[in-house]
Image (cartoon, rainbow, N blue to C red; front, side, top):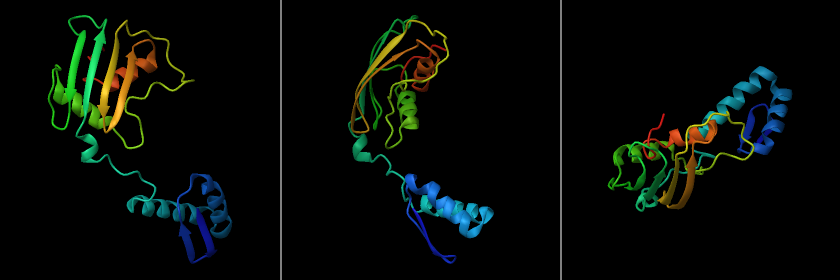
Length: 170
């Protein structure tokens, strides 16, 4: 929320629900161009101070990172069950280091790395083959039980974000 008590006194506390009202109040008080500069400066200051930003995944959350990956119908000897542990990296997987790097790249605090395609998503009607995969275990201190397929464009994209944890079928 932005509170304006005078043109020289502005306080800022982030709130998604009050952003439109704050922007409107600043425009009335300062004019459109000046309010855009103030909002941008306040947002940048809040981001730099870490206000509203989630904390990073902590090392103690990573100590138990262990996943079991079961791949079926992928062809060319890619089917099987693989074990991957990260932090430190080890396991029975064709590319443990690459799998851990892909997972680390996609892990963000407050977001499920293994989330399914959201209901109601508009996906292309392409078929990527019969391959399926199931990933179970613990990642970033949270339990994982995710199923992957290549049934449409959204699912293919979701699969490809997990390569090389999942085999590259592209």
